Image 1 (cartoon, rainbow, N blue to C red):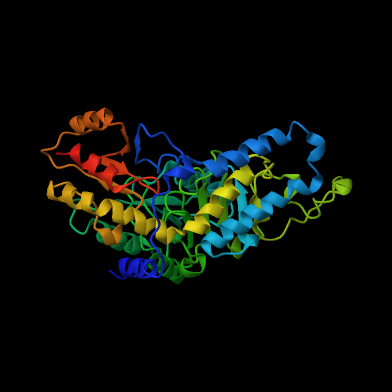
Image 2 (cartoon, one colour):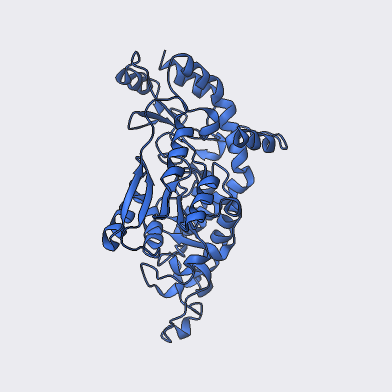
Length: 395
């Protein structure tokens, strides 16, 4: 219960956010409860994208310093969002890219175990399967417990129990992508430290909408796609790598990540030395003159709103609907063990999934279906009325 109390005590110290739909390019003809699939675009992010798209029409106006200035802005803003330092941040094109940099720089030996959680997103699975096979290690999947009673609590306990002296890596999300189940990363981090294992987090479905503090959790790496809860464009993301990765080998070798790359007149004076910190893990052309400033602007807006306030807003507009769904015998994870911006609805035997889908289609309610869960993922553009309409699809 401590986690829930802590979140809402913070929220009481400020004025609750109001609906922000006017800031988004989002159709009024749909009820969009699908931010976990892809965020709608902020109008301010769209405007910056258009302005910067036009810049290449006059390439002489793009100067050498412009290859670096917006990269630094993005790193600083993401670092502020997760309470880190800009030197720990890399710019990546995708989660799989960020995970690959981590997986290729974690020491593994024969017999080591890599802990994964059941049905997590493939981008945080395939790379670990690959390096496990290459090094004679193996992956160990912690299945979710059967039944619904204390499901998330039991799942967290199973993860802690699975971490042993054989564990080299725990690779997992903060919140499960299918139903928003929260994992106790602080406890998991303590256990990994006790056995000398790395903790690699996929924060794509949480960071931006749910508070994440690097100093509190102390992950070895945190990888985030940018087009979901960071509200940015597709094909750009950000990653945090701690100091244990600062001497690693990146999966690609591009000129921008090398020492003194800012000096264009000396680029053929090839450098063995990298830029400081995690910069070696940034993708080539990470100065992307269109996408990088768009993601920077999106994170700037998130910093203004604050993730804990987003959680509070989503809780307030959805709590009555969730209670009604539970009264209909639908299973929604206990509030203490799930995020408020992403949750799954599991149907009882007497409610037909096809019927629910049909009613949602009639009302233009947009959600996702992941496994047996109906995934609901609201944001500041949603209202209590949206959830009232959602509940009617189950009645």
